[in-house]
Length: 166
Image (cartoon, rainbow, N blue to C red; front, side, top):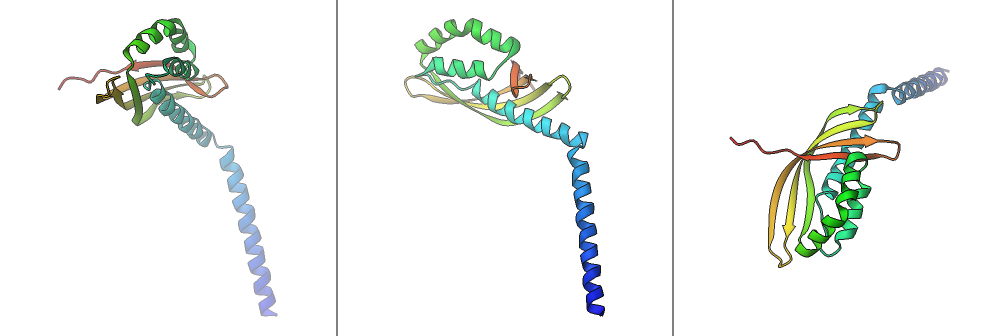
């Protein structure tokens, strides 16, 4: 008889634990802080990808690189890329230089989920390969504005941040 009561007590305790766990999980899914953190992470991921993309150029297929740049941008930045695209393509095709960029560090410094805007700072390592094969590495810092108009985060601005002289 004791064993039977012990089993019922264990079953009841398990059911209570499962119920409490489910209720707690439901509460966190609706948590505003969690939604804000998800938006921040999403903006940061998109910023890293788009900043690297806008610093990468295939010297053998400049027009494809410029199309990718335009797809990663919206608003004033996309307008500027479209406006200068043909002139930029001609100059870059003549030069023949390729670049490959990687964001080495980035952080969201401002996020407004209601307006769908974010500001990110990033450091970028750019490997530059000239047509003749000579390679160099450059390090840059950027401040980027992002907008989310419903189709995901895209760059609305990208500004180089000068390194202060010490």
